[in-house]
Amino acid sequence: MGFLDRGVEIKTPAQIDGMRKAGLVVGRTLELLRGSVRAGISTGELDAIAEDSIRSSGATPSFLGYQGFPASICASVNDEVVHGIPGGRVLADGDLVSIDCGAIVDGWHGDAAITVAVGAVPGELTELMRVTEEAMWRGIAAARIGGRVTDISYAVEQHVRGQGRYGIVEDYTGHGIGSAMHQPPDVPNYGKPGKGPRIVEGLALAVEPMITLGTKDTDVLDDDWTVITTDGSRAAHFEHTFTVTPTGHWVLTAVDGGEEQLTALGVAFGGR
Image 1 (cartoon, rainbow, N blue to C red):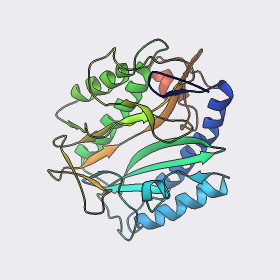
Image 2 (image 1 turned 180 degrees about the vertical axis):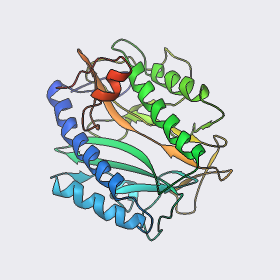
Image 3 (image 1 turned 120 degrees about the horizontal axis):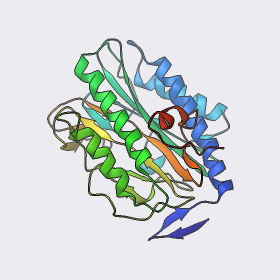
């Protein structure tokens, strides 16, 4: 394991393999949660499902106790962008719930997020989820060995801007990840390409666009965690942890390694 560009952590292939173990726990847990979302379930019940899934896989929840966070997932509903605390809130038809999940295996972290509709939702919310998830994949696909981190940022922004009038949250970003959940460098969801640390083999990044139906502006609730849109507009959040190997891209938190989505975008799959 080495470091360059002001604390950016570079992993060996064996260490990336360790991150893949954590990433699979996260990916499988999120798929379990996706299937568990329904009207009448509480966000606290989703959290219990997640913690059981993570621990039964031999992993540790990354979020539980992180800077005092009291749960194993973040569950953010409707105008809550990120960092919502699970509890007694009961989901209802028409809600959107963004679920962020992290796990640790042998000291290595995985981090990913999905947004799920509860029952039938208006078309504008389906489009919001589509645009946000596609922007994440476009950002991942833009990474190249020898490129720069903001190549990802530019690709995310360009995709969102090309889809309509959406707010791209600027106060919260993607990040480096490895032996800690949050590491340098930041990975913004907007900006000019060609800036920031170089993308090299062994760098792992979490890409996570947070997109709203309104403005980019956010506030934090009195719980000091939950981030909401200031205009009350709905928000969506998708995230994956990925790396670039000599043979292509590898999405460490996707159950299939990202092969299906990457292939559709014309990007070589570099998993092993």
